[in-house]
Each structure stands twice: as C-alpha cells, then as structure tokens.
Image 1 (cartoon, rainbow, N blue to C red):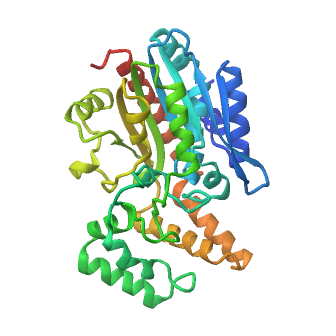
Image 2 (cartoon, one colour; image 1 turned 60 degrees about the horizontal axis):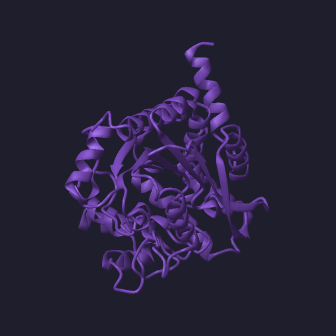
Image 3 (spheres, rainbow, N blue to C red; image 1 turned 90 degrees about the horizontal axis):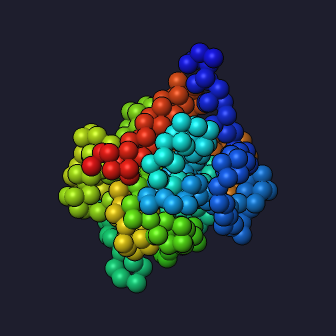
Length: 371
C-alpha cells in the first residue's frame, strides 16, 4: 500500500459524518485496544434522537507512571476533528506500542460537549462555552464591557443581517481596531446568556464530569500531558500549538521543549487566541495537584476570524428564534459546520499528520526524552 493510499484510508476511517457515528467508532476502537471504558450521559438527546455522553477510554494504565490526555469536542462541533485524531491514535499500532514501551498511559476523553457535537453547535445545551466556564462563580466574574457594547450588533433582529448592521460592525472595527474587536467578542462574557462566548452562571454538568474524570483517572500519575484538540482559528489547515497552562515560566519552557519554540502563548500576545480565563484545562490544577502538568490546545485553522464570528452570530440568532424556517435553520447549521470543520481530504490529512506529531512529541516528553 502506498503512503498516499494509506493516508486516504486513515482519513476515511477517522473522520465521521455525525456525532452518533463518531461515538460508535470510538467505543468500538477503544474496546479493540482493551481500554477501560467509562461513559457519562446527558439527560438531553441528540439531533438524531440518540443518547449523548462523554466517553472516556484509559489505555495501558497498569504500571504506567505518566499519562497523556487527548480530549475532543470541548467546543461541540469541533469534535469532528478531535474525534478523528483520537480514532487515528487508536488505529496507530506504532504509537500505541511506543506509549506502552515508555510507560505512558493514554486517557482519551471523547466529546467533552456531546450536545454541541451532535447539534452542530460550539456551545452546550445551555449556550455555555465550556472553555470559559471554569470560573469561581462564588466571586466576581471577569468583566468584558466591550462585549456588552457589541451584543446588540452581533445579534440583530433578523438573519442574515442587513447592510446597515454589517456596516455598523465594520465601523466599530474601524474605530477600535481588529485586535480589540477580537478580544471583546471572544475572550468570554458572563452578562448575556444568549450571546456569544458566554461563560455561564455556574459550572456546567460537562465541566463537573471532566473534573471527576481527572480526579479519578489522571490524578494518580506523576506526569500528565494534555492535548485538547480545537478548530477555527489561524491559517487553513495549520495546527497552532497554544500553551494552555498557568502563567508559569517553567511550564511554558517545558511545553516548548516538548512541542517546539513556536508554541503560542496567549498571555504573551503570540497566539491567534485571545487571552482567556476559565479555560477547561485549568481544572487539572485542583483535580491533579501532585502531578507535573504540561498542557496544550492544538488549534486547526479553518476560515478567517470574521467568517467564524458570522457563523456564531447566526447560531446565536437561531437559538433565540427556534421558530425560524427549517430552510434557514439548515443554512445556519451548515455555516457553523463549515466554519469549524473542513471535509477536504487535504485539510483532513494535514490534521492527522500534525496531530500524530504532537502526540509523538508528548510521548517523548512524558518519557523524559524531551527534558
């Protein structure tokens, strides 16, 4: 079999057409790997009437001193990509054997946000962005006055927006700059439950599930690496390696030793991502306090930021208008899917190649070969 044929076959078996298919493939592959499986169901149903769950596969834990976490669908619809990376890993005999030889277990968390994966939404059943939700809701929440100013423009009365609305958004960007617009829109807000990048009013059920998984299945390991797979930001097909840990120079340096000097650091202004708080990976510090932790979000680019925001605007409008005609709702859903997932084999091949490299680098780092 040629390399090109092998890649095509890997793409075919890794990228799924729906959450239901992705879940079935994940469970089948995990059983073939003799994984320890656990499932955490939601009360709501999926778009096809299917049961929704976060499924967790722990592979090779016996005797391992380190664990590599690979998670998917933190932002629902982004799960098409993340699930494919997990399936490709479980089909990769060489990587699995390397992990076993290195004493590294694999903890695969499939569909952190299964609702969004199934319903083609970035947010969960309560419109919560799980990557802004890990906050102390007993104290003051991060303020984002820039979003409050934009909210009426971002969610117009009718969809698609008319020319006056688009002109008003463009004027706002011209006055304040594209970077300030990006941060106001995307860094997270806690004042408009029907808006974009809403961080919630309390910790979501999915976040509590993740904390439980980390406490019960990761905390016993001395070394933890984590790759959380995302899509949407950056150049088409490029996997931006975004540091996802604390503001700690030692952690940043270790991540660079593992994944390269080009790892992007949001709080240093070197990432396409805004410097957010309440991100999902931060839960590991309380859940696994005794481990050495090295965290990265792997973000695959799809469309320009403005197109991505437009897709999210349409989705937010549709949630506010469930009575919308079916034809319009279908267009909105397709626009969301296309903004966070590309079905072209070239893009998919780029994803699998870069994902494999990032996993290999993490295995080397966890085995002490990159320190």
